[in-house]
Length: 298
Picture 1 (tube, helix red, strand yellow):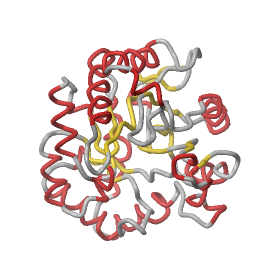
Picture 2: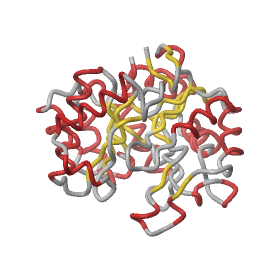
Picture 3: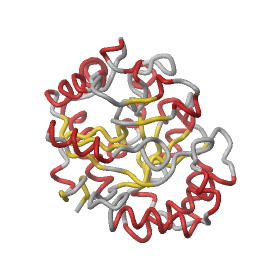
Picture 4: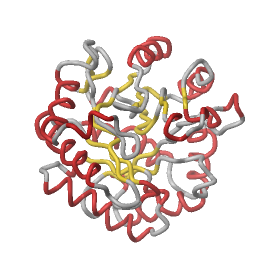
């Protein structure tokens, strides 16, 4: 069973899933940019659109120190009848809260375990995923401790880990740390691999059995749709189609359509039609957006 805010569902009930999203996030202090404070009513119209596209489950990866707002998630879940999976964990430097540095990996793991088993911030809403836990372009000591703590929490709870790879880098470094700490790699998703320029690197990561996140779809300033489609087709050709995950990772007000952005619906209105035109079958696309997230959470 999977914790979906204040209830449980089975993986088979997840349906079409956006596996790496943010419905509330606030990194504005660190970035010195109010655009990095996502919330309010602006995203409501965009959520209506993805609801009509058939999305049933959203994995919300805003965790401790990122502006997580459980009350807001509960409101959105009730309004749209989405399954929203809340997360536990910490992001990466320089976004780690001060108390992070005062705790060892076991203590950090205990906090994550408590949020998964008992509830978040004294509520009955339990986290259903550890994520997004991340690394910078070079893994810091604090980020290594974070990944080790995430692995310990996964051992105790069995929930998936979803990581953040800055510009797609440090995948093998993350795998080494997590594996040595006892994490189950078949329940691990590496995010933002569409931002890695080297397709062979991504294929080598897929060979390890982890899920491959192609999840900054629509952020054309970082990577073209053509590259993302080529990467997906190469993964399919190599036999890794059951490990592909798709999402948009909306994090800024300027990403929303009301502000001229591409928003969550870009995946369904623009990118999936391009995948079809590139001869990726509708059946396979459906399996990628339905079955693969369910497999990660099974």
